[in-house]
Length: 121
Image (cartoon, rainbow, N blue to C red; front, side, top):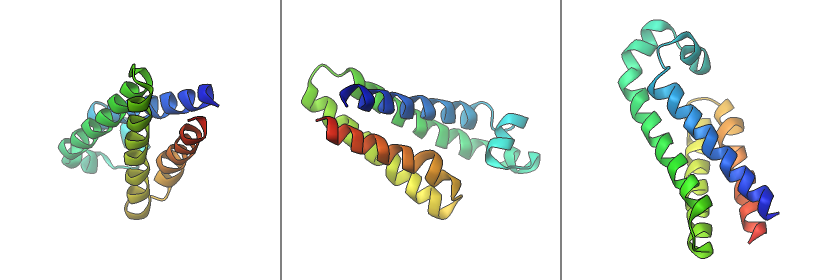
């Protein structure tokens, strides 16, 4: 279970690095617009806001990566709980306010990883 929890946390971190790239660097490109269902003019007018969101996703990824390699197991556990909890709350909020697909893309994986981390402890 410990290996599974590690892998799930790592996957969530990778997902948030990908979201960072989409929001900070690819927002106005066809790939970025497709990912978020935006028209070119929408993407252009919201690119600064999106870059800010991307930065926050990067902080979530950094915290999750930190939790995977922290030398103190107790601190690492607390970091995992905190950052997965942040991802879960962000996913729930986004799922109920922006797009239901965020529930499946962000909230559900975070909830599964959170359960795996708790069961592995």
